[in-house]
Length: 488
Image (cartoon, rainbow, N blue to C red; front, side, top):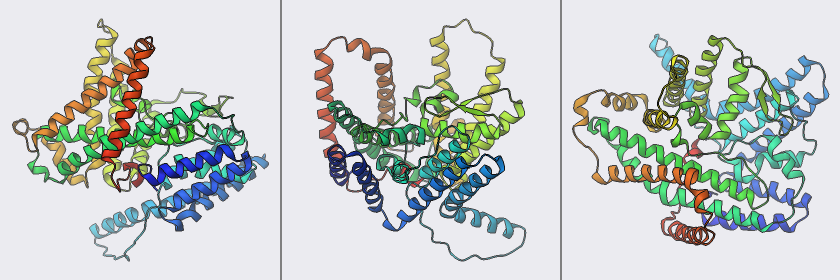
């Protein structure tokens, strides 16, 4: 069952209705079973994997909490990690690993054949694996207490709005909301519906239509593309994946909101960033913060402590040697790239971003104070950062590294800027969409509050906007059009 379908809308309507009508405990049971049904619409035989993850981490977290001896606590944490990462490795990385090992052995003259592996990647496995890991690690760090009610914990893990593609949630954010049912408020439904409509518009009207241009462009032989074509495709896919993934986040946040459950925001106009660090504070925020707290900081051997309110880790000390920071930077980004997909293109994508974050650190270290105003510096930085960030989407979308090198190679030859290899309208569409995205950021940031002082106008504009969005969604709705991040 996918979000951009009539089936999901009917399912969501029924789930919300039952949640508010039923008592808390029965409602929680309904969410648990309903989420399994939601997942089972894809393939029911992978439901046991979800339950195994829930059972293992539920039990391990309680065992960790019971014990005071550090070695004993660590053993249960390691057991949990082995089970979770072992399952993830088998389904997502075994084929990639064996293929590369066989290739390496063949290079050195050791011929070996392996049986064909036909492994289906379970939907959402990367996301729910990260969530189970963070839960057990938080208990191990004594940042949260383990949940003793299995149904409550399992409901957190399989809760259908975030199950397939996030946001990557922390137990400390959601478990308290599942234990106490809020009093019904019309605003929950109104705000939730608005977010769902926004998400459907971004997915069905924008992302899916951009996909046609992107697919046509990447289907061409790289030799037929110009440097301008490469830049245009980078921007077009950057816009497609942004609209597509933020659409999913909008629908997930809106679906949970209709039940009075608040998810953290996952996107905040990333293409308005004027630095790579800022970009990753705006893009896929839940994953970026997860990587920071559970990968980057531990690799740096930096301790984190609970903030006392949410239980989410904060940096205790950041005085680490530069070598540790740089090793952690490149290792973290390589793993983050591999998390997105079992392909060298994704690993390269991670190293690409790590390299520019590293360069940015070096520049900031030696940068002198400029007499130029802050907005001028931000604008100039934005003009440099965004094209580089957009070009990072080439390896994210390309089939293999051979295509990546050929497309990047176009950018370093002057003659490749002298012609256009694609249909003329793709350049116009790309420029228009990027301009409108920038305009929307400026409106939200600088003009929205001023316009809202006029009471009647914003209400009429919002009603008209949502009416148009609903009409366009029904006009462009396709039978099957999955979200890009479903493959991760």
